[in-house]
Image (tube, rainbow, N blue to C red):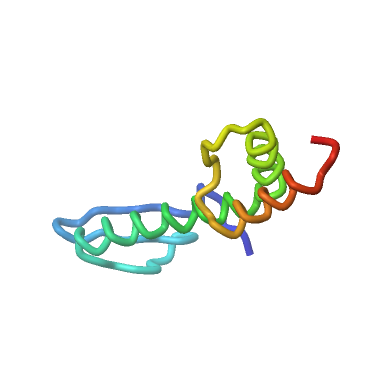
Length: 93
């Protein structure tokens, strides 16, 4: 079930960070752990976004490859390989 942004709240109490969801305490952690969790969440969100937009990214990357431009716009090797295939076989690009 998706969580609305308004349903998530972060509170700080001294060196502890509290995560509340729908007003209920979901997690308490030291600030060091909160920094690590936030970093890992951001990395995961970027990867999930890349997969969500994979089709568009494949088309963009394939167009660049077909034009001889080797600048990667995707970080995922699997998506890049798909873009290479698309550049090779899609005559509409």
